[in-house]
Image (cartoon, rainbow, N blue to C red; front, side):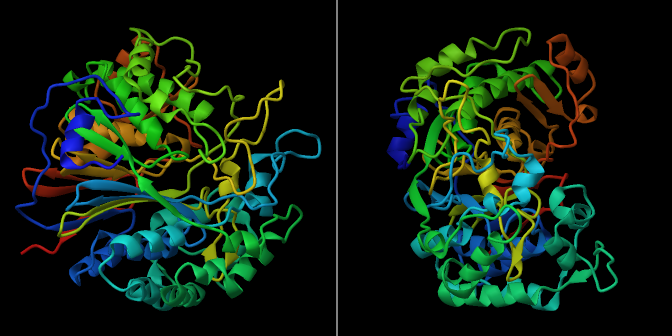
Length: 576
């Protein structure tokens, strides 16, 4: 929904259609005009990408312009996470109209996709590694088409002038970071893919090391084409043919055609917003993870989480139980709304949240089942496996406009196949591998031609009661993204932490019977307190770390935060 100032107050009072919450008193919130310090800021996962965005802001570009430059740089300097061959969700906050618009650049399946495409000849689902490395895993990429649409709608500078920094980094070489080195040397199946080995090893077969400079002239050439032709540079013509040819290679080829690439269109719509205390919280629409975050917040609003803090086991317990409930619903119902009915309004309705919140008892019980929200269909159970390989950033410009964007190639280096300097995604493995249950009921997230797979990506923008920007936040992390974002919002809004403190809080990802966390990072007594409440924390090396990046307005100043688990920074510019 679009949040004009008067309408924002209605949302916060819980009377907005489809996102109704309980009525609440309105108290002052920390948003408002930026009066001190930097007038603009970028928080992103790599300093070289942050600098590319700041350079655009310094020469008069706005947040939409900077987002293009940041993505172009991220696709080069952390290709394990996002790139030209991937997809994205983006929110745009317009400071003049106080509206939040959601942009959908999620990949879609080719016309030749079938519900059983990830089943082995035995009829059982393929192994995760086999599916990811196959030609069937790549969806039609949408990140550049989405950015082109958003920049056309809101940008101030010429599209063709937004790629210079990334082109220079590609031609002259960029500095490899420790995280990229770790991925090259890691155990992901893609690390052993021929294209990954060829790109990241020298003529002696030695893998690239952190601090060394890596050139990618093919990437620079592709960027120059995109600068001139927009998304047509990769969705039509020679690069499109190269994509199709690469996907059709190997023992399990994909079905993507030139017609599939040419048919891709990004979408925009009013963002999905719901009340949380004195705020309106906005995220992208299904099939994203935005609805999961909003449901989680709606559940927490019905607890005493705001009176707790990061050293209080009860607060973390409430977070864990809200997560279990939101995931149970999200994994059952969330999917591409163009193909299945997603009960978004029902999931966020006041009565449904009231009933679900009652399941948060004093001690954790068995894993909760999906609820029955108003308007819900009856899909089969889901069998999606969603690892991480994603990046998220936030930009605030000098006019107060904001971009929050999460972008991905799905898993590490996508499907491990490189075309014209960039890696292709393996996004279609975000569909349910098993399309039906034993009774033949299709999963909501089953594969279908031109369908977009469910995503956990959840870039978030938060407004005050006047529709003014308060904060923006997002994270990578695959299935864990909604829990990471939820934690950051609670830390910043309920526990009044700085954005840096909020993103650095311990992670706790609770779904099904699992409580995956970082026990050593909690305050003394929290782990034991959780155990007494039936929550036994475990570590899991297969769950990707968070990479939260956020910006909040505090005391008239922009305050940024970059997750210490990654290599990102939050830097400001453009003050008087």
